[in-house]
Length: 226
Image (cartoon, rainbow, N blue to C red):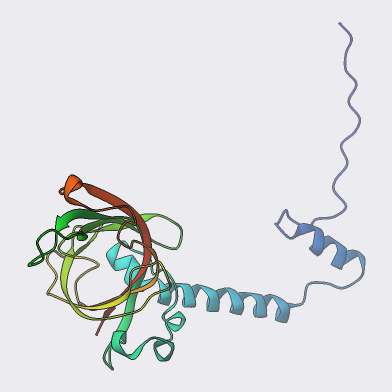
């Protein structure tokens, strides 16, 4: 076997420690521009400000296990139909996207023998946060249930037309929540930005009474409280 001759070790001429921005730091030294404390200070101030903003925005989600879908400023109440605006003093607590299906059943029209129609039975949907994580579910009742087990039912206050081929926008007033968690303190819920979910276009007649169909839909659910 041949011995391996190792060259002498040389001490580094640049004592700058490893750092994510090491390349930039080294160039500053070569160019004769040492790091300026005021620049570092400004960077730290920006980092601290960013952390403070994020902490404020996620305060509700940290306590509830759910994340706000969008900042409250994204809901422009003035741009919404008057019928579905929340009362003054209500504050947005949570914004989720519901994706799922609405079930319809073919039934005979009430007090109209021989005529039939598709009748709303109920929804089943998941509620997702900004990152697409499932943070709750929505089902017949109507009931909104958070992943932490807290839930609310609600009664309809008003509706407003949605886009063509979609279920209407809606405002509901929440009943007192059950269970401790994200739904505690919720007072109103808006259904916005609806897509799909309208009754089937297929025939509903005497030969298929009792038949059920599921129609895909999505909607934003905005939760408010005081």
